[in-house]
Image (tube, rainbow over all chains, first blue to last red; front, side, top):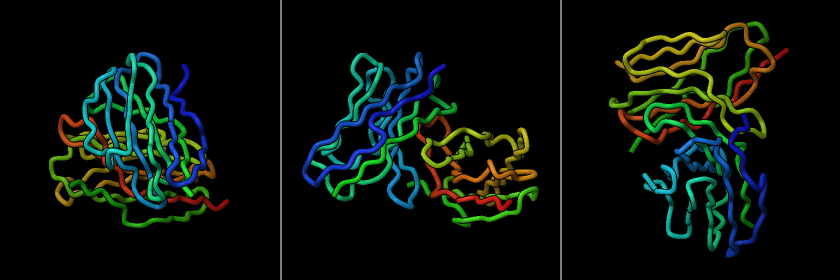
Length: 114
Length: 112
């Protein structure tokens, strides 16, 4: 069974540019999560999809971040315009069940904003 | 907000010794806890979980201990091996919660 995949693995952009990260969850997992780890700090929750609906987006930093999950399959996270403080590793995770269930993580996308 | 932290950011142990990684949390309503292992270039991988109605749970070479009185969680790795070198995160969620709150991570280095 394929795991969670993320693309790209690395992205280097300049401040003010736009970047779109993609996540493909494990097939059949309705729940999809985005997390972010800024250098040396904890992994922080960004948002949670159940199928195509946003269940919880309380962790989204600001309106420069837009997450979508068209058709309830893969998800994209767009940052526009990117700022220096957006640099970090963005993880996607998926799970079958919403509550108290193991979340399977992807390898992450390392975003560097110069 | 939630606060999940670790007592030590780095830990070095000799191969074959036991390792203990600690984690403190602040939300007394936390109901479910997971330890994740993250190797370089990979995402966090599930190691073991425990629910708040338990004090101890054992897996293969790993044991998680939960002390709800002092809101403390620990991960014990028996006979630590070089392949155990990684960053270990504790994560917790409240009852019925869908998001996990992670600690900053402890970097474990196993010395051959």
